[in-house]
Length: 355
Image 1 (cartoon, rainbow, N blue to C red):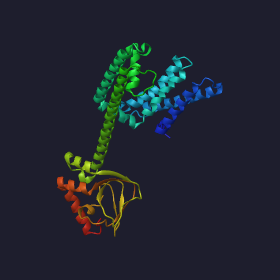
Image 2: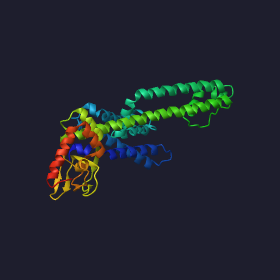
Image 3: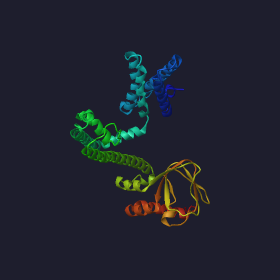
Image 4: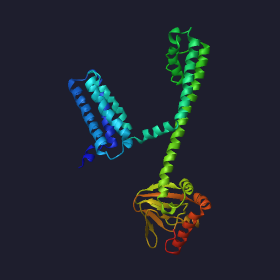
């Protein structure tokens, strides 16, 4: 077994190590642990640290052929996971040394696509998020100022200064409502109601911006993935980018496990299929097997006739489906594609295959 296989960590193992280490850190803060248990937990932390040291070695040495730009996040996270606990061992007091292992909270970021997606969303929506955050800051300071002016004489111990009133403003604006600081005057309660409603609106804006950003980013990724799939189909490879955009929007991606019946003989058909990867078997009078780049089911869109053969996935198949309504729109805007599909259907209908 190669060094790369010995040092390579799977994502579940990486998460399991982080969880084990953090549980040990939490347990070590319990004051009445026996010396034996404390020693065992310390050994567990050392074992996790050694595992992360091996992972750092894999990142720096085994995968040295990859560019530094591609490995920047991995190097930073793996380095922090090793260097911070080591520095704590050498520099920190004995009581708090294990707490520095909490840096392992960052390890799940290493292999998570979600956090990369979140980073892109925040980057794309940074201007809008900063704008809403500015509004939040203005409302927060304004509420603290108004609360100070209204309540300072009524509750000098709680609203005697703007910094003191700031805590009430944060709790009220976030609609948390701990109840430790409550306006006593009528004007103060009116202010509290206005601040609560403002907080609901501000947090709704934040949520809406992030939701829209996630939707746009996921749709962009789906578009790129579908573009790559469409470009792999020989029928579409000679088309311009403008035409490909229309096709990408019309086609729907679908992955079919091996052995699945994609369509059955005699049933009505409302879509045709393009094979991106894998193979299918068409159970006609003379069985036919089609592979990547082929398409089938076009007669259902052209003539409206029922399926004339059963099609089964021989292997796992990645398909692009084109529905009848989208086919009509595509035919009107791109007659050359429709003509190729019709000619293929005519050739197949002249032989034994009529599906």
